[in-house]
Length: 600
Ligand code: M6R
Image 1 (cartoon, rainbow, N blue to C red):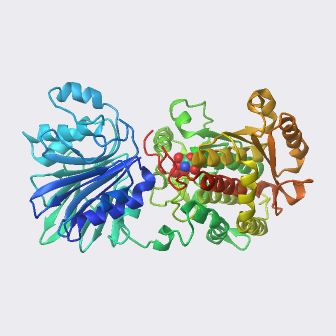
Image 2 (cartoon, protein in one colour; image 1 turned 120 degrees about the vertical axis):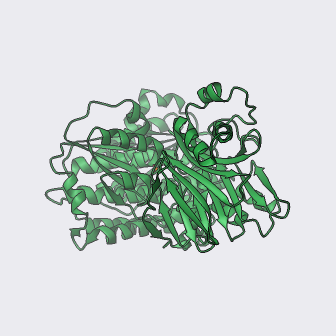
Image 3 (cartoon, rainbow, N blue to C red; image 1 turned 180 degrees about the horizontal axis):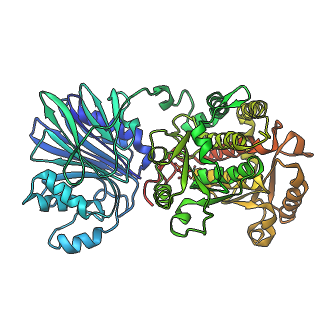
């Protein structure tokens, strides 16, 4: 995880970098730091904080004429979140400064073999890199020293490097961790995500793995060059315009991004319909469709919320498209591969398109010759670029760490794809999805009511969501939302499993929330809820009009039973949101987490 940003040019570099880091805080926010060149005192200055990026700006002074800076926002992997572990890191003799996103797996071996006499100031793996560069630069040019260093590294790394002896140059390296270049007339910016470039770049470039970049002034203008690991110059990649909707990056009057993004969900469904449907025709690219020709089995791989969307995708592939499907957690599949049916396709689902666990799977299954399709929210992401084909979920930038609208987008796209692959087009998607969007809107509009329900029901340190079939899969996601942003221990359970163990945890007033959207298991789930009530649990039911009974607390407008996850998850998202408000925690940036998990 972690976010890095660097700038060299004619703007106030510290402002560009700090603004960029603020936009990248979703990648980690344990601590942050910046190094910039102060031309007035002819020296490099480093500021660090274990607080948020805004502190870097508010608690320090930056001269207007600083033109070179690198910065980092950290999700701790090696060493706790303290000042010395915070990036940027200096080499032992202070010649080089570095920021790093990624993990160096062999850092201990490298210290033992190459740096036994070096003194380290942090517990990070990063310090090894900067010290190797310093050591090798004694006999090699800086570029050669960087190349020699990376030839020894095992792991993932996006690096920005300053040589303090050359204030007009910036170096960068990309391997397995994301890094992009942005350019404008005023300078060159490098960062982990194009979001960091908003307002500072006109165009951006995506980099391939094993790229080494130099940025320097040529004819009064800063320019960049890209080399491979043996030093050969590589042609610049395709230039992309920065055609961003910057409104998306603001809260639009909402108190939190999470609530804004929950509210946007009906619009996401409508946007997806407009992108993938033309009346009753489905506009899925024929190349995507043809990937499924002759396929006997679908393997869905994903993590976290995307994995929960994948579980629903399995229902769609099997019930609608009639293709047997299995779903795996990416980090499990990566190192414990099952016996794979030969005529299979791998569908990788990821909001960010950068999750390292998934990338490892993608590389692996591609090497084995399997067909791959990614479903992501970022069409320029690594998974979108490296899979055979990709489908965009059109959810718009999702900023809150807790994923909401991306989940909805993934489910909607999976429903459309499955229907497109179905011989009978068994679902009338136009009317059913439109109806789902209206039902979603209804519950978003009645969110004050959910706030009241939360006040009455969600108390204590434990909570359970239960459901059967598709409702069970939604329960998993509902539980993840609540635990992720409130820190209340919450489990999502198959309702029938309560009595097989978890019931031992039920005591007076522990909330048990049943999701009931499927007629055929309505009574079964209700019986399981009764069993919990008999142990003094606090019950709460989320149902649809046609599955509701008596005093159900949250009853949603009916939708097609297969599309119910689009609707039943929304009260659960709102329950998590309002409980987090009640507890006064940081909703958009829950502790210990980051939005993009770019380490395995
Ligand atoms: O970007 P991805 O969809 O690959 O991310 C996977 C998970 O890290 C992510 O869904 C995570 O579980 C969310 N923060 C949950 O809200």
